[in-house]
Length: 138
Length: 188
Image (cartoon, rainbow over all chains, first blue to last red; front, top):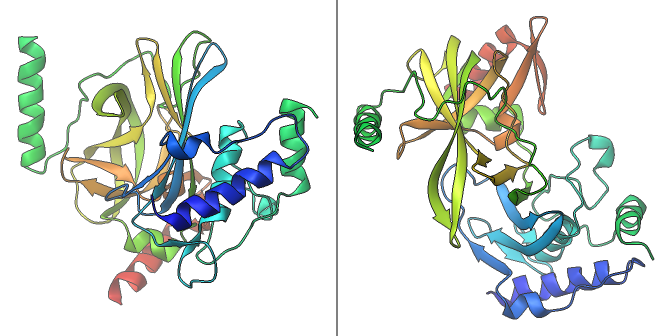
């Protein structure tokens, strides 16, 4: 996987791990191919990244997310790209069982379901933090 | 099995002719929605996405067909695999009432990701919900491989019809306003 994707994703994992909730995300997913990248194909160009979670009897057995390589990504200052850390921060939120938000009033939150080109959102909103603390405790 | 194979051949022929089905193969009369609530013992795959927000003009430009119609049938089907997981889709049959752009038959099939078959569930949070009997404004892209459609922008391409207005993530308009916007966008 492209280094920009890896670096941005590692940074996003650290952000969630340091949010004050009782869990951490280690880098095992990097070598375990839980984060990958491929082109989603015709009709799904509007999707920047997608998360897959497998569970049964309320136990999560697998979590993956995929960057859509139809788009260009960067971790840094490149224009006309999607920021990998911003995208990964959102997708890790799904790993932690947080849902998408679509009300424009929630646009500042990491779990807002829409993202724009060149948008940087690398800090958790207090509501994002409250969400994971509610699920996992402190 | 022979009956299923014959139906699949017929479906393939209809797809090749660019026609759409007025009866999906696995229509389930007990289903009232393409969205399912899993049972606790189900094996569940949950799909969640982050996406670009599409304004009305972009929805129009990205669509092959734009219409209003009523949902008349819903049925899940296995279609393909990903990482050794059988993918479940739910086909939705819509009877068109007003074609605003493009060409299609009066009855068409829309493929949505997700559904439930035999204790296996896929939930695609970014797919719109279709309820039996509901009327909606739909922005659709043709899926040439299947002869069916997918919703443009997933949940962004299905708008509700209420009191003569259509309401979606990109705003609230009358049908006349939508028609006018389509003409304007397609003229450029």
